[in-house]
Amino acid sequence: IEQDYYEQSYVWFSLELAAAARAEPVKPGSYSVEILLNNVIADKLDFTVIKGELVTFEHGITYSNDDYGFTISIPDNWTFKENPSDNAIMIELIPEKYIITRFAFIAAPSKPVKPYDKFAEEDAAGFAEENSWTQVSSQSRDYSLANGDPVKQIMYLHQDGQKNQYATAYTFIEHGDNVYILYAAADKESAGEVTEAAYFGILQSLALR
Image (spheres, rainbow, N blue to C red):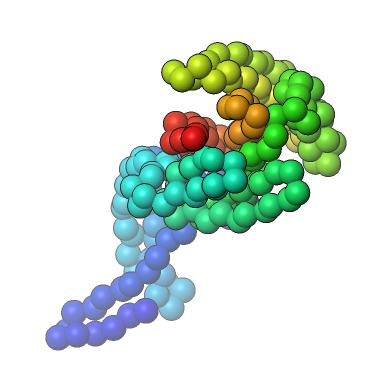
């Protein structure tokens, strides 16, 4: 939009910093844009994209559940949807801009979910089949929280027909009679970094009682 004030010309415009085809974030660096007026190049603008925080937790948004005794932090500008059932609660987490295939936090009685590695393997295999992915690799590790609660973390790497790679991660935290599962699946190239930042940020915020 061009407006004239006191013989000065102002051109206002906005840029969506994402590749249209895949909604991938533009990498930090120097860029140029040509400004067209009446289909004629009127000017050229140079600008710089800087790398900011992928995910922040500065707004202090949390989700708590008394039935399963937990609280997690919600990333800034994300929304969440509560999906309760008779024997579990799933919190679907939805980012504002980035395309993440699936992101959720689940609380349930631990007994029906065990063994955790079998649960993760079957769930990941079913999700991969839905999306026509093939599994490339997997890795897992076991450790304990400071309070002694056992943790199992399992990660899978999948690939589609175009060689695009997708990462799937599960973290199982057993506390009392319940298990708390943080789960994410994302395009490794376009959403891998933001998924990892949100994943570990939520994991570190988990408070159990």
